[in-house]
Image 1: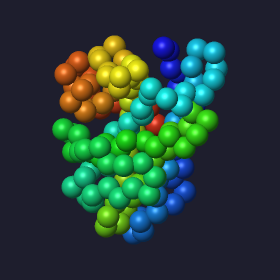
Image 2: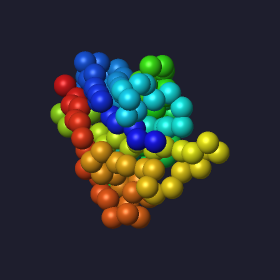
Image 3: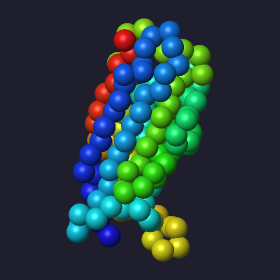
Length: 147
């Protein structure tokens, strides 16, 4: 099955230096018929904020790991209608003047929950081991900034 990312939105309004407001990421998936993708798919994101500057705390979604580049990796939560979300902030505070990129990884599975290389695609690239093995590197599709 083909899945298409039809929207990626980043809300950085609460990402203010010295605070712990969430950066919010929404990714919308549709199938070839334009219908919402609600099953047999997962969305992850490599959030280019250094884990060394604060562990990730999620109010929506979950931590998946830390990338080899030292960035947060999130599993986005399906909230309905093909929309996958993560909301996250550092355990400490946002540091001032940080521009950080976000790469999105779409991963589909078959009826048994299995995936394979041809069912995984990063937008635009990720240093996550599944993608680094295919010679991808971290290459964000969207950006956020601390203010």
